[in-house]
Image (cartoon, rainbow, N blue to C red; front, side, top):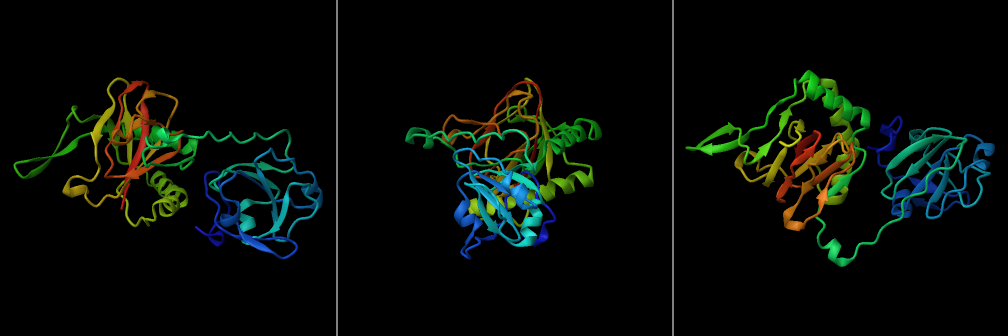
Length: 314
């Protein structure tokens, strides 16, 4: 997605690249200069609004941006000019918190009342820990909480709870769907609401596919249908498996799973046993993306119901 195509950006979107120009004339690219550390981005509409900007916490880079480099911003704010269409995506009189991966986190209206939260300090991992981390991409805020709740309601109400999940088995040369509790237990359904499906598709286009392209150097051109999943308390799991081992799914390259209600259940984590014991349970609305060739499992749900959305990309 580029700046010209966006009327406005939302929390969870990654900022498109743009040239930023200082008043002295030198310029730099946003992605080249400012990725890798948390940012505050402000778009004051007047010198007075710029002068009233709050002091950023230690470790945060603060950029005061407009179609012309704003004046009046206190140190350590940096005054920079950018393409007006890009500025329009941020909105006027806004202060955005942006993470180190240049993803928008939350928007505040200027002037800001009260203190804004400081970023959580990074925790260093030693070599024994990094050796045991699976090559999994975690993308925060792919779906908004409201969309997650709508998908859960759609599964349980509009789709009557879904159907018992079956597996495709080969018997006497014929493929056959069969329920097999030794492999998995869950309920599932394809979405039956075109508007909800379009919202999911649009969020993947905005937030997941650009990250997959950047991290894995792979451009997605095809996806399987979305599935909504429910892993019930005491009876929800999917034993260790790979997602591309049979001819009907050999085209799959990456699996994508979005948690819809993290914190409302225990258990149900992803585990990648080839890469160690670590368990993955991203926050509500966040996605896990990983190669379909990696062995993985969904551990049993101990309490509550785990809801998720999944698809496969090629």
